[in-house]
Length: 287
Image (cartoon, rainbow, N blue to C red; front, side, top):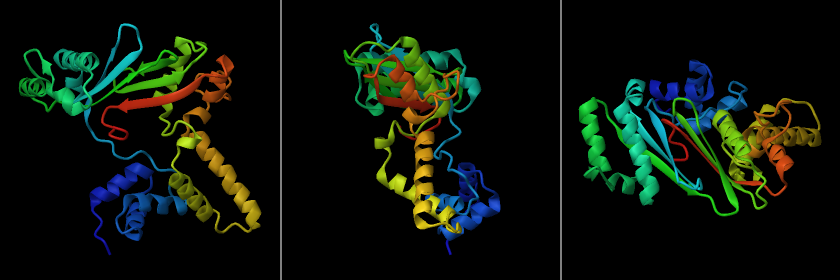
């Protein structure tokens, strides 16, 4: 039997919300594998859904820079060790300067960004200098740069405190998407954190794994096979509604019924979400 560390048990507990002993049993059954253990808990009905993993305790901010014509957007995550430093004026000025540099120079990677010149030294040298001065480890962690084409629009949103930044690119051939609606969708992504854009972007193995979990949950049901499969199909549809941006109930819908896709279709049937990017400080998923 694999030795299960307290840290691994803690990680599974944070991911699933299950109790400590249940997490330990699940890890033992899964030979220490976190993903298999999370599935085991769900099959037992102990954990309803896995929470996001891979988060760290890092502090910092998401710095944004936008081109003069509004078509190109850059987000840069700059990390530090405490929220106190994240509010420091010199730290914030550094983050803003790095974002401006990323917009102006268009480096292909964050490593290339760190090598660019900034105030007579490289970004890496400047972050080292700032680390020595402030007394906390400071690092330019990741970046994203997107440019909307002539028939596209972007919606962007930086959440209060600069801990979350969202960029959504829309295809809008007829020019019907308003700036307010585009920002509202970005705000929705910030609040709901959908992992997928639409059904066809969900990996087939993810859907099949979900079906396996649902079937395991229904194992003791005394119903005909065809009825059980209809239940499975219904729950898969619910999974899509919870996990896919276009099928989530739009947070700005006053009735709480309209999906994001329906809200956009009401503006124009040709509007389509092409891409979404969500940066959250300390979250390395999708980096």
